[in-house]
Length: 331
Image 1 (cartoon, rainbow, N blue to C red):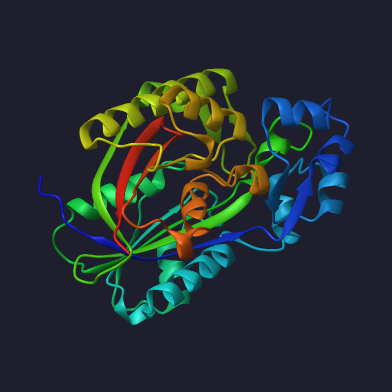
Image 2: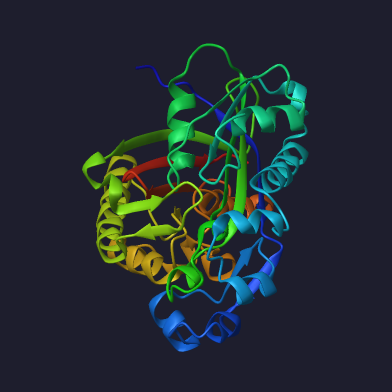
């Protein structure tokens, strides 16, 4: 299948507006401590959209109840991320002719998130549909768009998740991990941008599908140890395969992984030979933002991207699915 050449014109991100530090998580008295969180997970705070008093009094026992008190929705975060991407790209919603959306925490079965976002943005010239795979969605969207030859020239790729709405805050681990966020990427086959897409891959193993679950209006659950071990091995494998193919040099080139937790990212970096300064991350400040985390880690550095270097996104998550996207920084 032919690979469509495309460049990134703008990237945006948005985080939850409430910060939960480790003192707060410890105060929930679930058996965790600040020391344990930093040693095992490496997260200092997570950005969520649930009020602290709601978490303290209910522990989000019934996730449907949080919809009454949440400070932002997945759509609010998505709109903020898209506004930043439009501003950076000097484009308007009328310039978009394809929208792909990954939202793992939608409010409704329908209307679909892609249609809600299209309407709110005013992207009335665009085809819009949902392409969902949770944490590796950035790779999936780029993989799909690069192989979709017809019907688009400029695309908006959006990932959004408010996983805090599905967290059981009586669980000593889940409450310490999750944050909320959104990320957006504007790519074009015609216009010039800051990043050129060199390659992208996507794959999965459905025999591991029940390793990570969020039931409709239920709580998040995962087989943590098994997912963690597989994630580290598979991400290192992806890094080495792409590095060998393209001759990456991580003394100057950049790796961005799924922002699951800091200790995992450092373990991956050590195994793959990526120095910590070139292992870009935000998870220690924002928590695990599902698919938005990798995009946000790149978006935070949009104004200082190092020209002439390559940036490898290698992400893995629910499904289990995984993928990569390799960029060349061209300006």
